[in-house]
Length: 296
Image (cartoon, rainbow, N blue to C red):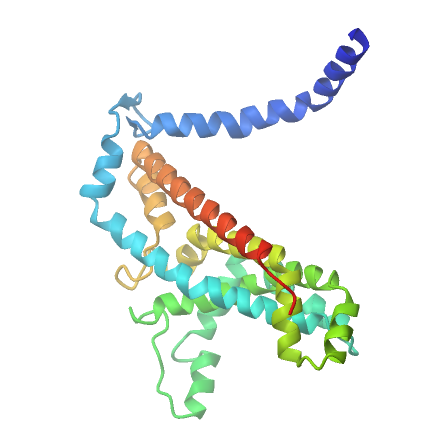
């Protein structure tokens, strides 16, 4: 008994540094941020406890809060499905045994490694209505110049295009790794039974990579809800108008422009609650569907 207890405490001592790091840099900030969400604090004066007033204000008196929520949901809808579909298409292409495929696989990941500032600069030039390459290409087909970043109808789709371009390669690598684990004998057996390529894709590929697809969907939704740098760098403060004024930009402005740290903390906790519920539902639905797949 004493020997077992000694081994147990030895194990705890090994993980103690990591445990301290989690408590100091993760657990404490989370608890402290929740406390701050119940206070009024401007960084200069001591926090004043006001209970749930920040949450009441957020839901009933802040019009920009609802604008930012609507814009963020719109952005999620514009980015998540294309990112997953394009990522899966790229992964399928990366999984082909053709000449030069190693270069293609590396090239697909370059946008992911590119800094957000560089990406913003490049796409600002691409979307420029006067010298941008996108409008130049569309002009060949008789399409007049579009104010991608100055028109309220096109600003958010433009940001979505840029985000999909940057993130699709990351999802492609994850899905490519999953595709590598699909036994080729399944495709061979299905081909002998007369299954078409499309049927093999639906009945073999999708079920076999379902866990990877679920993971990609979850992180894509979380990442899209947390969008900030693209908007901040490309459209400055959510312009034109408030067409790209997303949730995290509103949070940032309240925290670092208006110094309403308590209110910003309440916004952060609301976002955490939304993402927690969405992720939980995704995992529940995704796992139930994955367990229900049958090979046909």
